[in-house]
Length: 546
Image (cartoon, rainbow, N blue to C red; front, side):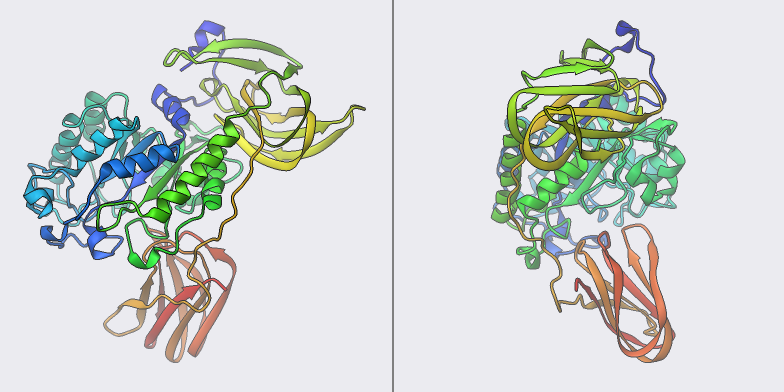
């Protein structure tokens, strides 16, 4: 990262550490969700699954990572232990692992294969290990801290350099963990590894959740935030950050290429299109965050063709856009001064404009529609509003875009046209702006269709209370919906809740009987299941997009 003292720059507010700057530069990350859930077609395993169910017939991690490389990802994360407690490495601390599965006659080590493939294809390695363990008899007891520490030590000392450790918050809202000890294990054994975490892990992490699993953070979006927001998991604020917050914790946008995190055969036609993946890039990497796109390898142990094709098409599209920066060779001036800084970690040299107005004049008019810029983030987040304008030959300005936050990188699409002179102006800031990495591009999107539940397709009820007065329907992943349907045996008041992975949130309530259909004013896009409660019997709960 840039040593501000060398340039006489004073930081403003919360600022990043070296690991955080390195992960901003990575930008695009890929997630692989693979385990016993793959073979039970479930999202959250119960922990009671037998080990011999894990038996991929054609497991090929080279195929995974070759796909990831071709799609432009720079770091890959594997779910080495999900909530079900099954370990993809032969852990010495549990029998619930790959060593007791038929895979390679119990001699397999999926983590080893994964990290070897990462290095073969030039991707950095990340490992997801769930603190919540539904199999371990230790979970919920003091000695679970030892159990998890031992497993954490195994994966951080046996597989070479690791660049990210991912602690999922699901199931752990009220758990008491020894975060200090677990963090020290990461820092001592993998000092370059960034820790992702939520809730109780706040204060021990480098990266945080962006507040949803739908593929976006809001505009504005700041890395600065209060730790209490992370602890309380206030999703709306996680999605925006807090300008001037006392801690600097960048977000990751974790989202699956399918509705589910794990493989479900009935989702083979519900794969996000290349166009949708492009939008995720702009709504994450382009909004001062990071993109973490998940693939669910199937029961063969392979990434499905459509998943790979769409991700690669998106990657090539973004790569093509970034390959030609029309700002290179442009005449760039500002109403302040310019300095050149060097990142001591990688030697990258950047021009920094200490100004609030920057004019970019291209050698000739060019067809463009994307502008990108960043702050010297080592000096803190300073900007809270800006505009981009096109300047004609008479000096008249036409507004192209109005925005708020910038941060490490702000990339946005504006109206396509032939432009020669663009002006970026900071219209609001808490300290003097320090701007860098100016980019002007042409983005040519790919047509695609969005996968969803579809008209008339309802999720069936999977759980019902003993008295029948509470019923839940699972989606097998995350689907958008704006209509809920269910049946009540008699007249009764009812309440409908949406489950986002941590808590049930009330979305509507009313009174009725018989078949009931409710149209919501806006789609809900970040929900795993819905629950209906009433004073009478409930049946046929479902949801869909109108």
